[in-house]
Each structure stands twice: as C-alpha cells, then as structure tokens.
Amino acid sequence: MSAASYLGDVQQLVLQASWRRAVHHRVLRFHSREGGIRCLGQLLGQLTFGPDRQACDKVDCALGLSFRGLEALEVPPAYLGLFRRLAPAFAAGAVPRAAARLGDTGPSAATRWEPAFAHRDAHALVTMHGKPEVLAQAVAALDRLIASTSGVESQGKSMAGMHLRAPPGHVDRQNEHWVHFGYRDGLSRPCIEGLLSDDVAAARAHEIHEPGELLLGEARDLGDNPWALPSAPQEVRAFFRHGSFAAMRCIAQDERSFRRALARWADHIANDAGRPTDAAWREPLEDFIRAKLCGRWPDGQPVTPEHLPGERPPVSATRPPMPDFATQDPDGHGCPFGAHIRRMNPQGHEVALSVRPRPLFRRGMPYGPWYDAGTEDAPRGLLGLFFCSDIEDQFEHLLGEWADRMPMGFTGAGDAKDPLIGAHEDPRATLVVPRPKLASTPPGAPWTLHRFEPFVRTLGTLYAFYPSRPALETIINRTWRREEEPWLVR
Image (cartoon, rainbow, N blue to C red; front, side, top):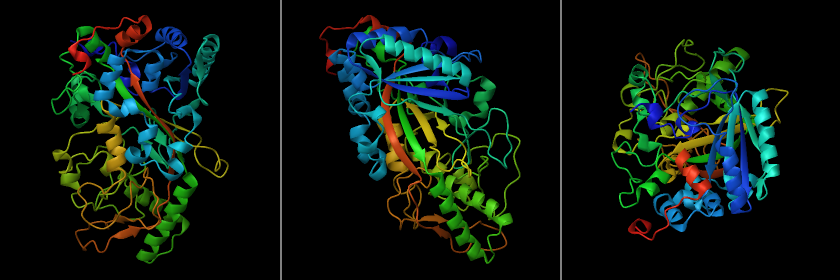
C-alpha cells in the first residue's frame, strides 16, 4: 500500500512540517455544541490531508481539539474514557501538569500564561501556513467564519510567526530556516516509515521511526501498540486510528539576557587563555560558546573535540550530519553532556540504546524579528508545535526529565538545566564544558559556566488531538457507537 493511500486521511501538518514562510495560530472556544459542530463542518473542507505537497499559492490548514473541546462537542463519555485511560496527559490538559511535568514555574508558571491557553476555554487550535499575502486572506476568511457562527469565538489573541533567513555573517541558502539565539533550525527531522523514497530513507535511516510513534493505532518502535483496541468495534477503532497528539507551546526568548551571558562567558574563557576579547576574536569565541551550549555550531555543524575557542569550522555545503556521540565524542570534549542536543536527541549515545526512543515531530516556527540595535525590545520567540502519539512518554518526558534534570551518561560536576530551554532558577547552577581534546597536550581542567538566567519564558501550552478525516466526520455527523459493550471499560 502506498504512503498516499495509507496516510491519505491524516492531517498534513501531522505528517510533515510546512515549508511555507508564514504561520497563523488561532485558539477557539465553543460556547455550544451546535456552534462548534457548525464551525468544524465549515473548516473540514479547508483542512489539508495526506503527505502531498500542495501548490505554493495554497494555504495548508490543520485542526486540533483539546479534551475540553471534545467535551464541549459532547463526544460520548465512552470515547472520552478511552482518552482518560490511554492518554491521561491529554485528558488532564497542560495547565495542571505544567509545574510537575514541564518545569513551568516562576515566570513560566501556568497562572501567568496568556489567556488563549486558559484551561477550560481553549477548545480548538486552527493552524494555517502560507505565503504572507495569501495567508492574510485566509485569516480574514476565518474571522468571518467565526463572526458568523453563533456559539464560537476566538480565545485570546492570535499567534503569528514567520521563518527567519540566515542572520548576518552566515550563508543564506534557499529553504534553510533559523531561530532566535542564532541557530540554524530543522536539522533533526524524524519521520515515520513510508513517507520517504527508498534512497532518501536509506540516507536518513537513523531518523526513521515506526508509524506508532506519531499515529495512534499503529506499532511503535518497540513493537507495542497501546491504541490497538482489540475489544472495540471497528468504528470505534477507526475514530482513534491515525489521529495524533500535539503540544502547542508558545515561548518568549530573552535575547538580551542570552547575549549578556555569552559576553560574560566569552570574557571568562578569554581571561583563562590569557588574551583580551578584542572585536576580531569575540564573535567567533561567542559562536564557540553557542556551539557548546547547543552541541552544534550556529550553522548546524557538529562541535567536535578538536574545535578550539575562537576558531570556526569551514562552512559545509551539505546538510550537517547528526553526530554519533558514542563513537565520535564519548567523553563530551566536543559536545558537553549538558548541551541541548545531547539531552534532546542523544543519537548513538550508549545510554540512548537502553531507553525507549522518544521522538518529537517538530512543526514550529519563530515569531518576531532578528535581534539588533533597532529591535531589542520587540517580542520574539518560538511558536512550537510538537506531534507525538504519547504526550507523557514523549513530550513531557523530554521537557520534564531530559531538559530539567541531570543529563544522561554524565557523572561529573555541573547541575545546570538544558542551557537553551531550561527553567534556570538557581544562579549557582553550572554547566561543565570540557576543553578541546588535542593529541599534543592533555585537555586540562574544564571550563565552568556560571550564572545561568531563564533565557526563555513559557507563555502557554495547549494539548490537542488531531483527528483523522473519518474521525472529524464522525464528530460532525454524530455517528457514534453508543452501545454499552466491554470496550467501554477495558
């Protein structure tokens, strides 16, 4: 069976990131079942399904529903009960789990989130991608639809973002995207089996996962299938099959604090090396520190044990590979154990071989302009959309465990959280950065980076279910299975 026929009823955004330049997110609230169903009926014809690329002047549209949204649409209790049993994080919602499961405390606490993410009132998330001028027309049409549909309203303010091209000083290639803090984006691209041609899949074998890591009702990498539902009638299995969960996470990035910390750490390393941080050396030295914090150089190339402070590797003409930490950098002399990618995507590391894979299928886009003297105070950050089949086991585990706790495989000193996205609350926390490992000299004592600040702040998180086309039709037409049978309680 071809990928198109196998996945043709899956929402397109679930299957692949949009390459279109701009995005618009709108959270909706349903005041009545009738209004919500009318709205869904109007939106169904605008949603895009399947893995096919569409014409460049078309808008891609996706729709997710929160558990509260499913309740507002009066989805039968039996179906809601299956969500509660098999997807408790989705059923509970992000707000009550933010502190314990996501590390969202202090300025990022759920009590401070934007109104769009209100626990009881965020019912649906509409996401549209397109060219800016075409997208503006689609947003205007959405506004008219909401205004003309009784019982539906926008919840909080809308959220808009746009892909960033390469910052000054870096090669600006077509179809390359960057994010704030100055890093190239989209280098880790997990994908499910059946979406890529054989030759592309062979080159990206380490990024290919079983469909069940993204879609309900299919086997996961370990061979299990929590959503097989063998006791349920076929129409019930069809409702859940090929749906997916997502976490919409809006974060603000404090570029001023980040750059202030880079300058402070650059002075520390320069003083240790016995040379002044003059203008010619400061920029490449700060890029060296960026590389250590992330685990890659700003343009995406892996940072290796041989890279020295103040020296940049030559620009690569191809997409940089994902490093194999176990064979290329087992002691963290290139990519520190606490670095962002070594936490979030521990490819090849021997520790990763003994734990469950936890891929996240990222569909995010930055918002706000590049940081410069004229835009210092402009809001900027990331509109993250992370798809998976298990919010607890994938999304929450990465944020609450891998980003917020001691990095895997690390037995030395240092207790800072993920240096880029961690909720830094302890100014005494440190990140240990081993010195480059050269054949001629021993590495020497590592550098220790102090005084981490909260470079990001969570503005809100929303858990949503992205139904397949048949599931959406079931909600709209109310063709539910209502008999009291064993599948209701098993």
